[in-house]
Image 1 (spheres, one colour):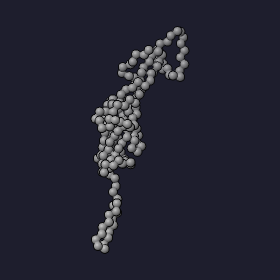
Image 2: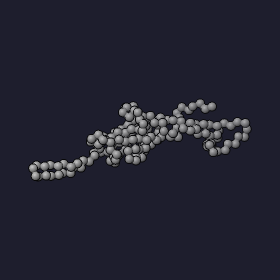
Image 3: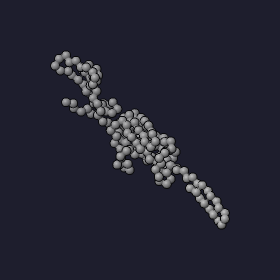
Image 4: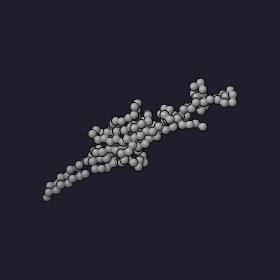
Amino acid sequence: YTLRLQLNNVRSELSVNVAAVLASLSIGVPDDSSANSSDPFVVTSALQTLKVTGLDQFGMTMSVLPKLQWTSPTAPTGGKLTIRQTGTSAQAGFNVAGSWSVAVSAGEISASKSFNVVSTATKFNLSNSAGTAISGTSSLIVPGKSVSLNAVVVDQFGIPLASQPDLI
C-alpha cells in the first residue's frame, strides 16, 4: 500500500507492506461433510489424507503455511501416528484401530480433529494343518480327496479380527 500525504506544497509518500500473519488453523479431510462436527471422522484404512487450512488476520486462506508441528494427544494403546505433509495437505498414518486425535500447531495457533479408526477386514491368512502359511502363489498338493486349511481374517494393520467371520 502507498500512503500519500499532502499539506499545501508539502508532499510525502510512505510505502506500507502488510504481511499475512497466521491467525487460525483447521484440520479437515477432503470432501468431509462433517468438518465442523465434534463427532470423530471414521477411517477404514491405515492412511487418511488431511487438509490443513490456515487463515490470516483478515480471514483469508493462506496458500503457504508456516512450519507446522503434528502430534497425537490421544491414541489407542500402542498407537503411533506418522504424518507426511506437503503444502496444505498431509497423509496421516495410523498403526492400530481405535480412537485418535490429531493436532497441528504453529506457535500458539493450533487445531485438532478426532478420528475413529475402525478395524476393516482386508485379507485372509491361510495355513495348512501343520501351520505352514499358504500364499496366493503357493502350490498346494492334496494327497487325498480333501485338505484341511486354517483361515484367519486380518485387518488393514495385519492384526487378526477380534471376531472371526464364518467362512464358507
